[in-house]
Image (tube, rainbow, N blue to C red; front, side):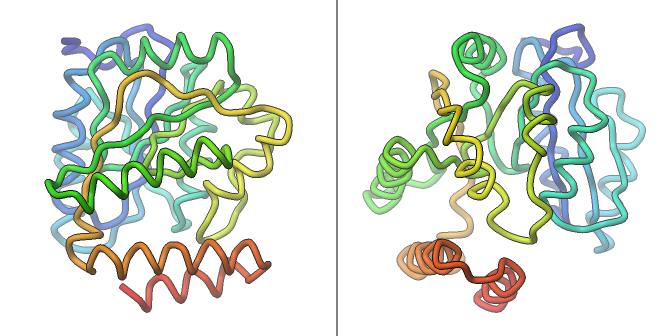
Length: 237
């Protein structure tokens, strides 16, 4: 266990935050058990009272750099975090995703062979449907070289900047980035798995959510404007 997240390792963990309630606190508690993390940067655009109250408390914590962003959007938030990062390795983490305790070591070893990479995932819910979703995500990523935010994407900081960072689009920034860079640099797969929340599938229905994701990705592949896709995504939720 590493109780001091501000050590001299080269890993910067960047967490985009928007109206996450208590989840940023839980995120930091989970990261406290991860070894060799240099810094945690939370880039926030929250506007609901509960989230703002939680984040106001986090501003006093030494274990996190809390950055208020004026422009909402996961791509913009992650790019801002990357610009501020001091570590030579970047890990983009969703607030409700848990890393294995040796994630920093796994990432460092993976980046000895690759410029970027991701983890396989486990959903924190029981039942064959969730195991099937995990398997489908794993196979999709292996066959297409596409990584998504749920899979805790990581990469060399300087390489990420030379690639133009994430495209400034409201949705599909992870898929756009994966497709763009994988033509020349295939992603590595770190040992171990991240555990991510199944709340989206549980709240909106497993098959309804799966079909929506497939539909959005198909439309994106067919050239639909990401602004329109973002509106469809928010409307469906």
